Image (cartoon, rainbow, N blue to C red; front, side, top):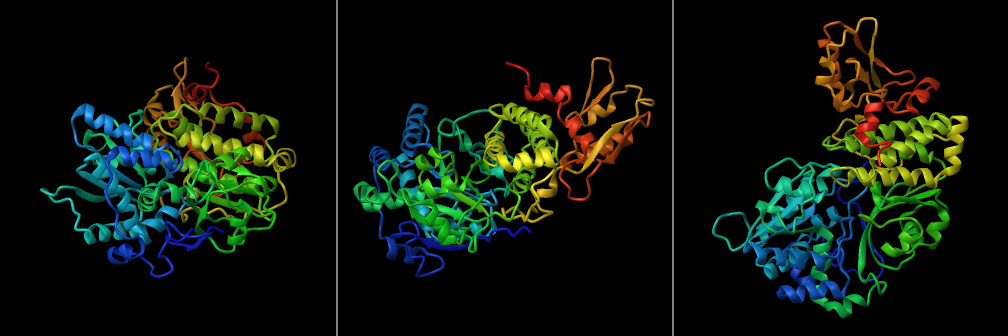
Length: 539
C-alpha cells in the first residue's frame, strides 16, 4: 500500500488560529478576504524588523531552523558592503512526500506569505522577489496572488516579482538548488558552500527563507512581539504548522502552539494509542518510541531532548502491525533515488546504505550490520549538500530505535510482520518513486574472457574502476536504476564480450536488494574503490 498525500489535506487548529485564520470562511483567501481577516500591514525599517524577529526568536521553518533575524542582518550588511540591491526568495519547494504544511499555506493563505516577504523586501530595499514552488496547485495560487497585487516581472516596476517552478524532489528545496533554479540552472545543489546572503539571485545578496517563516513574520508584524510571545513556550513562542500522516485515520496539517503535548496532536489525527514508533522531522528526521511520545511536547527543544527533531514539521507514526525496518527500507530506497548524483557520498553511499539495510533485514547478521554502520558513518559530513547528512541521520535513527526488530531480522531473517507501506511516498513510476533504485541487477565479468581493455570503466565509473593490475574492479552492489542504461552500454561495447548483467540472486521485480547468504557475505565488505570514494578508513 502507498497512498500519497493530497496537495491540500484536512487542516485543523489547536487553540486560536494565527496562520490559518480565515480558513473556516473560505478555501482560499484572495486579497480582499485576506485584508478583511488580517487587516493592513505597515512597513518597518530593516533594523526594527530584525529586532522583531529576535524578540520572538523567529527561526526558519524549513528544517534547518536558522535564526531569521541574523539572516536578515547578514543580507543587509552584504548589500551595503557591495552597494547592490538584494533579492528576496520565498522557498515553497516542498519536495518531501511527507510534508504539506507549506503547500497548504501557499494554496490557502498566499497573501500572508507575500506580506512577510514584501515587508522584508521593503526593509532591505530589494527590487526582486521570487517565489519557488514545486506543484501545479501552488504555482497557480501564487501567480494569482501576484496578479491580485499588481506584481509582475515587467521592466520598470519598483519591485519585479515572479514565480519559478522547481522539480518535486528532496534536493530541489535545498537553498543552493533553489538559487540555481532561479538563476536559470538545474534545481540541484551547487556543490560548494556559498551563503545566499553573500551571493544568490543574479549574484546579489539574497534573503531566502521558507514559506511558513514569511507567514509567521507577517503575523508577528501585525500583532507585535509581546502578543506573539503570549502563545507557546517562552523559548519558542508562537505556533508551528505540522503535517501528520503515516498510520493515522485522518492525514492532516495542523497549526498548534508550541508546548502542546505531541500525544494530543497524534490523537487528533487518529494515530494508534501506542505507536511502535513515530518519525519526527520527516525523512531527514529521527524515530522516537512510544515512551518518548508520551514525554515530548511540540517544540524543537522538547523533541530533541527525547531524540526526535522538529525539522520541517512532518510527524509520522506507525502502528504495531507493520514491520518498522521494512517501512524504513522503503524510505531508504527513495532517499537513495533522490540523489543529485554530484558526489560520491550521495551517488554511491546512499544506495550502498539502502542495500546494507536490506541485507540486515534479510538475515545478514552482525557483519551486515557493521557494514551498514560503516557506510552510514562514511556518508555523514562528506556530501556536497545536506541530503547525505539527513539520510545518514535517518539510517542511524532506524538502527537505534528498533533494536528488537533488528535482532529478529539479523538472527532469524524477519520479525514475522509484513510491510504495509503506511509512510507516504510518490506514486510508483514517477520521479523519485520508491522502486527507482535499485534495479535488482548486477554487473558480472567472465575473467576467462576479460582482456583489460578498460572501456567499461570509462562508460560507468560509478560501478567499475581499473585496478592496479589494469583489470576492471566491479562494485559488488546492485546497479542503481539511474546507471542501468550506461551499465548496459558497457556490456554491449566490451570488445571481449566478457561482461553481462544478471538479476541478483533472490531479487524479483520491485525487490529492493539481493537476498540470500551469498549476497549478505559479499555486502559485509565494501569494494576497495567504494571505500576510497566514501572515505572509509581515512582519518
